Amino acid sequence: MFETLRYENSGGAARITLHRPEHRNAINRALLRELNAALDLAEAAPDCRMVVLQADGEIFCSGMDFDEMAKLADQVDLRTMHERTEEYMLTLKRLATSRRVVVSRVAGAVTAGGVGFVAASDLVLATPKVTFTLTEALWGLLPSNVVPYLVRRVGFQAAFRMTLTAASISAEEAHRLQLVDYLGPDLDELERVIRIRLNRITPDTVSELKGFFRKMWIIDTAMEQAAVEETARLGASATVKENIRNFVEARTFPWERRSGR
Image (cartoon, rainbow, N blue to C red; front, side):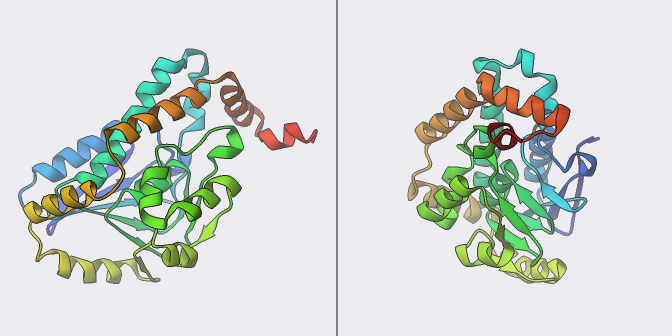
């Protein structure tokens, strides 16, 4: 049924597994469409209380699919970039507002747009080997769509520092900042414990809770639109498209060219 992910619903939990390990589980348009289709299935299943988002391979998610972007670079303008960016933003919103409890189960590195999937989740389980990195600024981009959800979790300065430095943070640091809710080597055990607690909460209550907390926070339609427009503007620029094309074709990083290496 799916090409970029695997879906299974059993025992009250829908398990969505990103399945593009050969592409570092990068986010392309097909993955976004299929992720939303899987969420449709989960939300239509009357016995489903929880959605578990996980990934195959050593990378949880590496963010935007640069290979796809490079192939389509000549077709990418402000309008098409806006459409692609809005699709991603709406997916984050859906994760954050679903009537089901959304749990990210992270056992590999998380980069760029993958951090958005994690930050928009209700609960995050991670192993000690996980790292989180926002790399967008290195390419002349900004993680505009990710930032509202990241700030909600870790605060303004931590999100700003992660964006500015593009430095990886460890699972332990992410746990301290509350990007990770539960940290441990055994994700099965962590999931078992929270499932016992979550089974007491009805989907109606989950929906009411998420709706109320959303009113208490700064993420609204205007902020979402501003994030989409900023990412679209930068993503459609000649500089960013050239940076991505050069990386895909020659694995040349923008900062290497600037320094004359």
